[in-house]
Image (cartoon, rainbow over all chains, first blue to last red; front, side, top):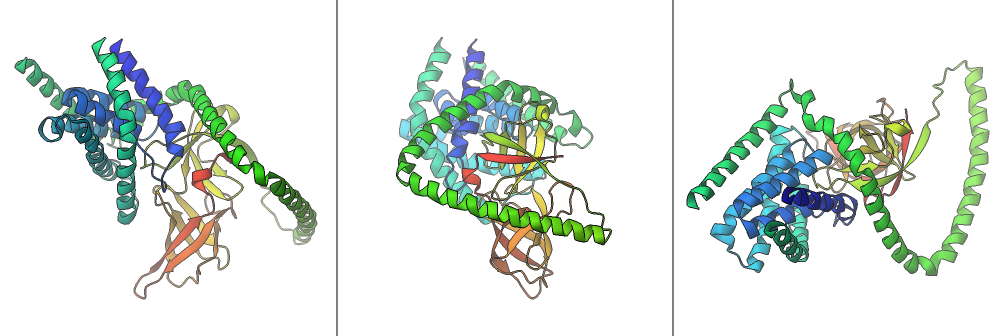
Length: 162
Length: 273
């Protein structure tokens, strides 16, 4: 039941991402709600739960669109890394947790670029475009994170403690 | 408790290794066609289709209300302008019909066998966009039920949008020309020089393999060449915004501003095969 609730919430966030958030791009760069949620969940609940959340988010992304298994792997790794960093680097302060979203965006960007280029042989945009896109998405995701932090905390508390 | 935590961490490491193996194995050419998610995806997209439609309609409803409020002021002026444009288009149609008749007469006089190609345009609405910054993909509300096939070209009133690459029953996914993996055979409408236009995620399109001797200039119109079976000839792709020619290069680098405004894209036409 708990898993079903989590999966349904992720699908809802995915729907928001592909229908509304993807239209609100800044210079062509979109915010990544699933990345924000994976990161906030990981820094709140730790590496193992962050890994599972990332895996579910990535699977939903891979199942409905995008590319095969890339998001499952990158988001699961991201959840695990952010959860691990939380214990050693970020601490538990809310403000510090939000900087984790910037770090997560950079980490995810590098991981996905590597997977896409080396595993999938996909051509990437020019290096300058990639750097600009990374800076914009980093700022965009970090600005959106404060909106989602209370929602993630509230809903995950409801789901986890039931 | 400590051993329980250590056990869970070990489980996570195991899962990471399994995931990496799945990604590597799924990219081995012999196994590519067996990817299980490929079989699940059309079904999954059919399930989500009505929800995407509702979310999209809700967003459209709320934003069009706001837009209407701000545009109310200039609407009379716009109406007048549009009426004048329609008159101009009607006059152009009469002129073009005359030219078409003349063209046909001349062709028959020359016993010229023209390709009888009249494209059928299927209007479609955008119900979703790729959530990832790596893929420039949109989802439209037309699928195999509307006879949409993979590799159909997609255009709008401004120019070339992209091509259909994945078809579900009620929806299809379109790879935009701005995607780095997209490649369109194009030519300069002024000089006739040919090249391959590919995307760069954000920003202008790049034209590759354009000969260094080609006399392409800033402001030239770039259109599809019709060399592939996917895109018909003559659809506008964009306008040249920069030309970078070096003495020692075989090819020159040309940047093209896409004719289509992808951030405001809402309605498109699929060219049915």
